[in-house]
Image 1 (spheres, rainbow, N blue to C red):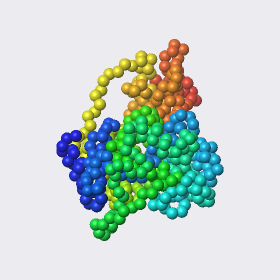
Image 2 (cartoon, rainbow, N blue to C red):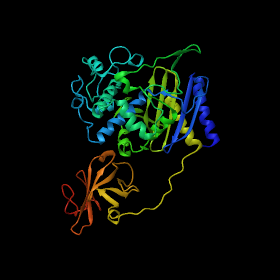
Image 3 (cartoon, rainbow, N blue to C red):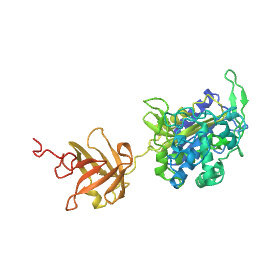
Image 4 (tube, one colour):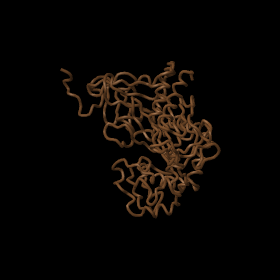
Length: 448
């Protein structure tokens, strides 16, 4: 990056570390799947922390557990609509679905009963289930967003039962290894920051504990570095390295529930936190454990993300810092638009493009560079979706109103396309074309 860009980023990082009194703070920017800048301030064992210094990730751990669950789904070993009872029988909350657990809509209690799990040594799965026999479900499953650390302890056990090994071994073998995340571990290894609380009225530190969380570990156990977390940020942005398909990661980034009302700014997909701000739609997660804060966010559309790690219990604006680092990068070094190039087009597809009408409303059907179709009103707002081929003259909607719906190409006796049948809506080449099967028919006297 340009020296001026790096200075702007470092100054923003330095301001956060100084004004928020963080013992140490590291951050990075990811662009187009690559780590393009990182910096550190403060001290770890008397040295400035770097890209290989470990910090605790907290709830960012949940995104890796969710990825392990989605791998099981993609392999056909479970369905997201399955009730938990089908896979983990004998719990008091078996009616909740896997999708609800992933999206924090299961209604499960936020924290495990007993002492605060983040500051005490965790028990095993049997003890966790026993503690949840009574009153574990606080809200009707599916009724609303209710963040649940317990839900991810449950998902970790789900992964373990299907794979026949611990959730951690699964994450290591199926995710960390393939992505080259060699410095992500359940406990600190090598250079690492110790967790501290900062006194609110004096420049003093208090060491914070970091016990093993046992069955609750899938909710926030992992430690990692800027280098590894940058790879994970890129993963959530679509650079999946074959661990999941790009389509599945995009599915994880889709909004399932919001937690702040109608004009949402924060919500959740499938294991992924979503943030909407300043025209951006970001995906990732924050993390908070005693002595540590973390944040990883990526704008998949713009191909840029940022991440922050600090060893302070509270007081550091990790989310805003991530947003500022992305904005500064784009202000100083705006991305270059992708160069347009012509492509080869199947003539059979080309004849489908152009003007169609839903009743009197004109629509354009366009062929996209990736072989998809886009159907959208020719002018102004309205129902618009992309479509992917699934068979001869058959397409399926990928997003917006027509997601999952079938688009079929209707042809006349000569084989020429004369209408589109989209979820019973008929589009014809001219408004209310009598040659097309318009529902209810067309007035025999036509336009007048």
